[in-house]
Image (cartoon, rainbow, N blue to C red; front, side, top):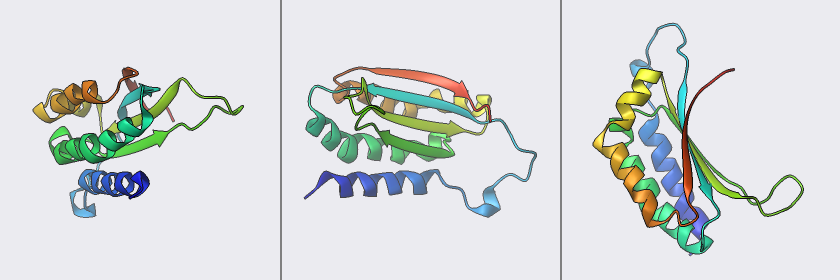
Length: 136
């Protein structure tokens, strides 16, 4: 079985867990989004990384998404730089929150801490985790 369908199913499950029905969407003025961005360096073994990421890590995060309070998740894989070279970064996870307060509450949860602790199990090239504010 190919790995792409597993990751696609896991990503769909994560997206579904993060989405809110229209009836639950706040009817307030737009809020400034905040993000946690996880940048994965090239792993020692990309096949092992992808297998663990699809079968363990993404489902782990998805199972805690509601507790964490993410509103959107985007997963990006970098196959090459613009000039066709092997990039230093392998993947990125962009986790969005409605506000800085929501982000701070989310990263303090047991679910977020479990997902963060899981990084050591597969991110063999190392990671950088940043927080940021949407500016557009």
